[in-house]
Each structure stands twice: as C-alpha cells, then as structure tokens.
Image (cartoon, rainbow over all chains, first blue to last red; front, side, top):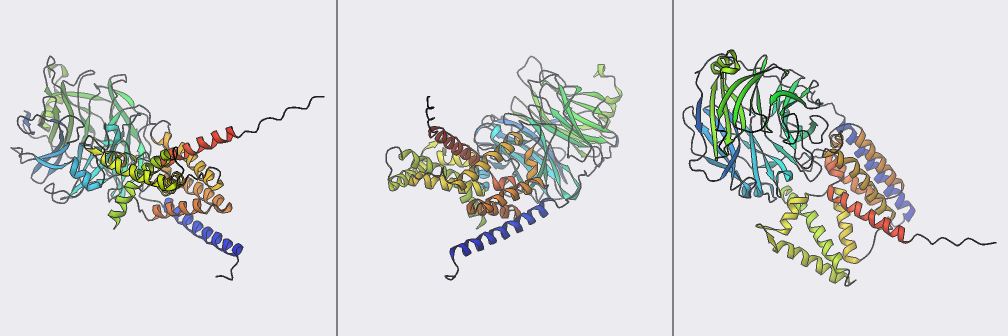
Amino acid sequence: MNSLKKPGRNALATGALLFCSGLLVALLIHKMTLSGAPWTFVVDVPQTPVRGPLELATEVLSAPHEDYFVHGASLVATPTGLLAFWYRAKYEGAADGQLISSSYDGSHWSPTTVVTNSSTVSRDIGLTIKSVANPVPFRRSPNEIWLFFSVSRLSGWATSEILLMRSLDNGLTWGPAERLYASPFLNMSHLTKSPPVLLSGGRIGLPAYQEMNQKFPVMLVLNENGRVVDRRRMGNGGKVGYQPSIIVTGPTTAVAFIRRLRSSSPKTVRVSRTSDGGQTWSLPEATNLPNPGGALSAIRYDDGHIMLAFNDDPNVEHDISLAISDLQGKEWKTLGALVRVNESDEDLVMYPYLIESQPGQFDVVYSRVVKTINHIRVSSAWVQNHLQTPTAQK
Amino acid sequence: MMANIGFLLDRASATLLIFAAFAALTGIATMKPAARIGAGLIGLILTACVTISGRSLFDWLVSAIERPSAPGLLLMIVFAISAATGRSYQSVPEFRFGTAVLVLAGFVLYPAAIGFLNYDTYILGYSGYLLPLLLAAILGYAIYRRYVLVALVLNIGILGFLLSAGRSLNLWDYVIDPVAWFLAIGAWVAIAINLLRRKPVATPALVG
C-alpha cells in the first residue's frame, strides 16, 4: 500500500466511490420502477335482504356517570357480535388519553376495557406522545383486527400521526403500537376517522387527512404488512375538507364523502371521485346534502346504493340521520333521523360511525356532548320502510 | 439491537441541536473548546432536568423533531463540531454544495408535500425515475468535484432506503429532513451575510 502514491490512492478511492454509487443508483432505479400491484380496488358488494324489526334499538355503551370527555366511536363486527372503540380523556386532547373498547353480544354491552393509553403508546414507540384519538378498526382476517388511531405528539391535533395496533384474537389482546410514516414534515400531521378499503395485492387504502395549516383529505396506501407505500390526495391540497369516507363502487372507481370545513360554503357534504383505482381523485365538489361541518360515515348498501350517516342540518349537530344515494353519490334520498336532541339544549350528537354488521343489519355509534357513547341498531326493514315513506312524514 | 439503534437515532437530532446551541452560545464569551464542550453537555443535562407539563424539555424536542436523515445527521455533526471548536465551514466548497442541495431539495419537497401547492412532490419518493435520476446527477457532480462526504452520506441514505432500514418507505426521508433543511437555510443566510460584508469597496474612478 505504501508503494501507492497519493494521486493513485485518490484515483482508487474515487473509482471505488463511483462504482458503489453507480451500483446503488442502478438498484435504486430498479426498485423504484418495479411494477407493483395494479391500482384496482377489491369490490365487496353486500347482500342486503329486507329483514329485521321496524323499530330502532338504542343503547349507551360508555360507563354510567362518565365524567371524562368521550368521542370518536367506531365499530367492527366480530364472530360473537360487535366490538366498539372510542377515546376518553379529561378533555379533548388531554395528556391522559385512553382508547376504550366494549363488546356487544346482541343484547348487552360489556363493561369497558382500556385498550391502550398515552403512556403505554409512548413506551411502545419510544417517543413521548400527548393524547390518543379516533380509533378505526379494520377486519384483516377472520381472527385479526387492526386498529388505526391518531396520537398527538405535542399539543393540538395538527401534531398528530397515525399508529396501528394489531389483535390476533378478535380484540381480546393487542400487540404494541406501531407508527405509520406518511409525511416528510416530522411525520405530521395525519389523522384517521373512517375505515380502510381493500386494494389489489393485499394492499389497504386508509382514508386520512392532513390537519396542519392546510386541511385536505388523502388516501394512504399500506402494504400487506401495514407500512405506507404511497399516498394520494383527494383534490389538490389546500383548505378543502377532511375525514373522507371512501366507498368502492367498482374495480377502479370509488367515491369519497368529505366533511366540510366550518368556514366553507355551501354548507353541504363534499364528494370526490376516482376512476383509476385511487391514483387520482377529482376536486371535492358540493352535494345537495346539508352538512354543519360534522363527521360523516358511509357504507355500500347494496349493488346499486350507498348509505350515509350524517347530521341533516347545515348549521348544528342536533340529529343523526341516514340517507341513500346511487353509486355516484349524486341523487340522495333522506330516510329520516335516527336520533334527535332538543334544539334548545346545549347537547349535540356527533361523529356517527356506520357499519353493516350482518346482511340487512346496520349499527351506528356516535357521541354526545353529555359524555356518552351511544349505539343504534337499524334493520334493512326500517330502511326500506323509510325509503317508501314521503320525507315530510318522517 | 435494532430497537436500541432506533432509540438512539430518535434522540440524535435533539442531542446534537441542544449541544450545538449551548456550545455556540458559550462561544460568545470564550473561544476555548473545552469550555464550549462543557457548556454543550451542561445544556443536555439541563434540558433533561427541566420539566414542562410532565415532560422534560429534551423529551419535548425529541417528540417534535423526529430522527434525522443521513445527510441531516452529518450536517448536525458538522454544526456540533463547529460550535465546539469555533471553526467555520462556511468557506468549504463541499459544505456549500451540500447545504445548497439541501436548501433546494427542501423547497421542492416541503411546501408542496404539506398542501401549499397542487402537486404532492412527496410521492416522487415512493416510485418513478425522477428522484433517483436527480440523486444520480447530484452524486455524479459530487464525485466529479471529489466531495467525498456528500457522496458517502447520499450512498448511506440510498442504502438505507434499499434495505427499508427506517420507518419510512419513501426515498425522500432517507436523503433530507426538515431540521437539516432549516439548518441549511440558516447556513446559507450566514454565507450570504458574510459575502455581502466582504463585498469590495468600488475603486474611485480616475478623473481626467
């Protein structure tokens, strides 16, 4: 080596660096241009026979005399009934946040269980977080449930990111929280609200939204291991709306219903559409359904319809109603209110989350300002009955 | 092992920033490297002890700023060394090139990625030719100019992405981070100020 003069050593080092760099760039181009799974949705068309009672069944899930803030309820069907989740804290965004669950056997809701809390999540991910919010369950396999949720790292939801916990025994036990990496800016600020959709190749489309400064909906694409492999905006970005609820209508088509910003007009639900499997989404446009700036929850009703749970008022969240539309989300028929609180009260009904738990059986959970999480069971018979009733009679 | 490396990487940005800030502040009073290093270490202890809302200042910073990219880590190490020794790297061509690339890349990435522009440039880091070709051009120029550290650190970033070594599966996150971007902007503001200060006085024109 001593016999090698300095210019020779430099040339050798440069050559080695050039070779390594060339090799790495070639591997990089190969990896980034590999044609992955095609951009197509997995279409699940539910069978919705007309069945069940004409009356609504309502219950309260949260603990009696709850004095903490409870919000962001969600549901998933299990082999024995339902599993509900929500978050609980001294006040919204407080540092002592908990994710709570309760199971339903068809007649009773179980006592509540703490799934995780701020300090456990901090230990899981090795970073101190402040609060937890918006749990969204996803049925991954017959026994496996994934639970997406948001955590605020500092103060305010703008500093949030999305985490994932997995259960292999239908929600009896949970693995540690894992971080989803979805933003180049300090991994802030994405949140969840609505359930994911399935894409081809085992991938998952997770509806999410950007919260910091701008406010717009996005679809995060996760691989089969739950890592973010792409993200697509619904529209251009900017101050648009949030909390998209995606409904797959065909192998390459879907619609997303978007909660409007309270500062925006008209005071109606927004909708964005894709016709290329979620690669691009149209600019969100206004529908004729009122929206006070409250959360929405949509499901595919049958082969030709979508059902939406929403607040049927342009200004306040005094009711939770159902409406049905065609697969384009253009022609809506309001079915009527599932719950309505007195407009003179300070109470509000918010954050509906709708699922079809069995063919022809629908369940809605929502939160009230009076610190309760509530459940309503709706049958397809109720839906069909209200479809045939003129709106003025409801 | 990987969990420990992850734990250390999560705290690397906060540690280096606090150390550099305290060492640089001490540089106003003394030029002695030992005193500056001592101040940097005291800064770390102080921020670990001072608690706000049940969390230490150090923890707040760790929660806020994420782990660094490979170039970001190198830049913060350079800043920490500069703060501890008092040596300036502003006139080093490799430093200027590396920070200039970070400044430009950050302006391409961040405003668009967080929604200020219609196109999301972050998705270029998931697939496609464009970002790899841009990196190849930067690497080629760096090797041509013998900017070995820049080339090495980009290679480390690319290797990390190829091995999916970090939490992200996006190439951008392996070659830039917001803290590095802000530091690079700061470095170029300082370079610009120094250039303006050193501007030669115009020679008076000869009369007659």
